[in-house]
Image (cartoon, rainbow, N blue to C red; front, side, top):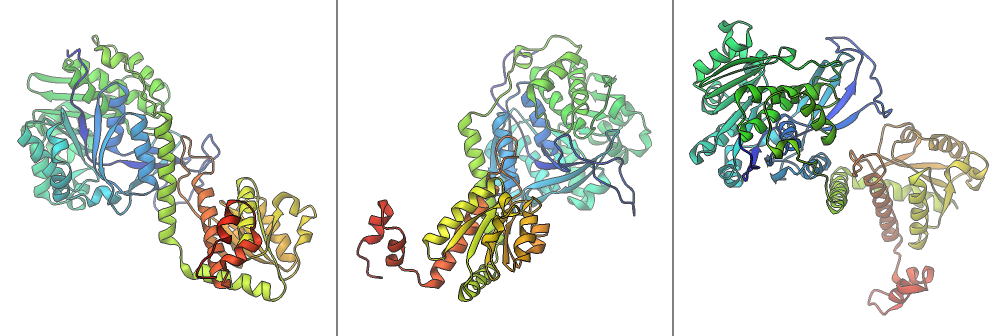
Amino acid sequence: MSAATPSARTVGIGSMAVDRLHRVPRILGPEEKGVLRAHPSGALRDLRVGGVVLNHLGWAAVLGLPVGIFGKQARDADGAFLRAAMDRFGIAHDLVLDGSASTYCDIYVDEAGGRAIYMAPGATAETTPEHIRDHHAQTIRGALRVTTEVSQLPLAAVREVLRLAAAAGVPTLLDLDVPPSSAVPGLGSAEDLEAVLGTADMLKPAKAAARELVPDAGSDALRVASALRERFGTALVVVTDGEEGSAFVGEGVSLRMPAYPVPQVVDTTGAGDAFLGGLLVALAAELSWPDAARLANACGAACVEKLGAFPDDPRAVREAILSRYDGGSLPAWVTTAPPTPAPPSNEALASYDVALEELTALRDRLNPAVFDDAVALVRDAEARGGRVHVTGIGKPEHVAHYAASLLASTGTPAVFLHGTEAIHGSAGQVVAGDVVVAISNSGETELVRVADAVRQLGARLIAVTGNPTSPLAKRADLVLEAGVSQEGGGLGLAPRASVAAELLVLASLSAALERTRGFSRADYHARHPAGALGQKSAGPRSDL
């Protein structure tokens, strides 16, 4: 047993995904329909960290193993969400952010813990051998061990990773996460699949995937593992077999280890990933094979009694693992390693990055013609003697105050309309021909009743919303999208990025109105004669 914490990192490349979890009564078949169940939070969709490689590295990190992940990702909100989690868990990352989109998975979990998974590989599927050579060769050469997968990473890229590791004398472990019939041609050729299975030092398939490769071995996991090792010459083959446990076959080892009992299975998603995380720790700690199997099985059991595949609560899952493990002594770096929370500065900057990436993505979606239409709508109202009112409820109420003030200071007279008071009499400030700008991220709040009230009074409606198909949007004459997929922050619930999006969309509208009006510095000074801006606007300029 190795008592010292490994000085080099165990690193992996492959799937790192945002898991979008949905609760359902049961997994549906073809032509069936069903109703989603709400999560305990009340939401119909729960966002979690996932992806087979990021998952098993997360479970290994919880038990104190220094780990890192490398590969291709995108500069988008999903990527920022995943990188923030890596930072919280101390998972080093060597990532190139030039992918088309970060990976996500839609996961449907039924009441018995069964699941159906639909994957959108994104940047992972775009990784090439050239990318590996150009960007990650040094990370591979300096690793304690390299892990990769047959799941979402193209087989040609997997082959290059294994080649570079073998040349550097770095041991490798391959997770066969999908059946070979899905890997070929989905991820590459049959030749590539044979090459990667024959190159990895260790192979960890689930039994169902393994049986496709050795159909004559039957259904016994130990016989399947033996047949795989004989076919590919692999140093170690580990076959996971769900609630039946696992089987290990290698030089001097042939064992079957039963699974630990789990009183209530919540979600089987990621059990094999957790198992592999425990196995990586056992390998680094140089445990005996029976103890390695026990530690890996304990991780798998801890995973299925929680929702999601990633160990979101490090302290709780550590306790669940170590309370089950009944093997020999573990080194101190495994038993005493504390969780690795992100420093506040990291959390702050991670949230900042989410907002930046969300705003960049929104900018790419915005159609300039929509702003032209909004300017025309406001100008038409003004020509008929109408005014602009800005309203919102909750956080958008504060945005509405700002927007009304900004519009007024840049040449478009505007007033704030109190969202909740509007349906108790304050809508009387609106008359036929006015324009009301209504702000709501969901487009499903009480502001919909305000929209009905002002429309009945003869006003035109501009909706600023993150949901262009919402009830608010359907009532509007024109919709300015301000949608985000992630808010930022630890919980991802409080409006952060969505507020920034609403502010900038309205600020952009004010800029367009200012320009089309021919608004000058003198005009601005007339409305803002005091303070630093008053002094600045009063200065001599050639455009006056």
